[in-house]
Image 1 (cartoon, helix red, strand yellow):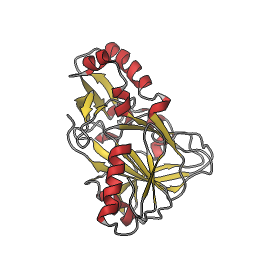
Image 2 (tube, one colour):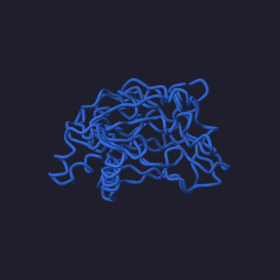
Image 3 (cartoon, helix red, strand yellow):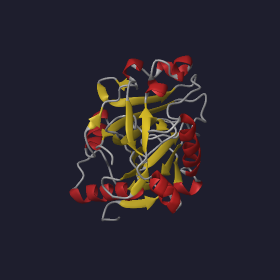
Image 4 (tube, one colour):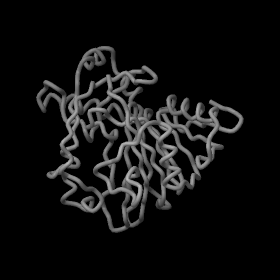
Length: 281
C-alpha cells in the first residue's frame, strides 16, 4: 500500500486509513489512483488532509469512484446540485446523521459511498465515527450466521425524511426538504457479498432498517437489538477528527457512520457527494 509519493497509514485496527502525500486538486497518475482504490477496498473508509478543493474539483474526485447521486433531501450547494450541504449553525441543537446508519440503504440500488469535505469545523467536537460491517458479520457465531442467511430486511426513508418525520418538529426543518419524495422502501439481503471484495458484510442499520421481511415488528426488534449492539463494538470502529480541508470517503456497503453532536454553539459546514452503487446480493 505504498509507492513513491503516497503513504497509507491505518487509523485503527477495525477500519480506516489516512492517505498522505497527495494533492487531489491535480490530475493523479494511474499508480496513485491504484493506491487509493486499493486502500479504499482494504480499509472501508479513507481520509485525506489539507485538500482545499473547489466544488468542481470535489465533483471530479468523487466522479472517479462512480456516477454521482443528486441527494433529494439535503439542501444543495448553490450552483452545484451534486453537492449536498451538511450544516449545523451555532443556534441549532440537532445535527444531521447522529444515529448510526449507512447512506441511501432505502434505495433499491443503494449508494456505493459518500465523499465528505470539511469546509468549516469547530475547534473541538464534531468528529465522525465509523464501524466495520465485515467484522460485525464475521464475529457472529456460525449458528447465528446460518440464521441470517436468506433473510431480507426492509429499509425506508419515510420515518426519517417523510411528511410525518420527527424533523418537522425540530430545527432540522430548516436544513431538510422534499418530504413528499420520501416514498422509498427497499428490500435487501441482511447479509451481502461485497461486489468488489467478495467478503460478506452485515447490511442493516439502526436509522433506515425497519423490519425483517415476513417477520413481525416484535420479532424484528429482537433481532435488531442484538445486531445493532454487536455491530458497534469498540474494536470494530474508528473515530476521525476533522480539520478544515479534510476529506473522508467511505464504502456504504461495508461500513456504518455516525456524526457526533457535541459542539453546540459552534458552526460546522460539510459538503457531501454521494456515489451511485449497484444492486446488492
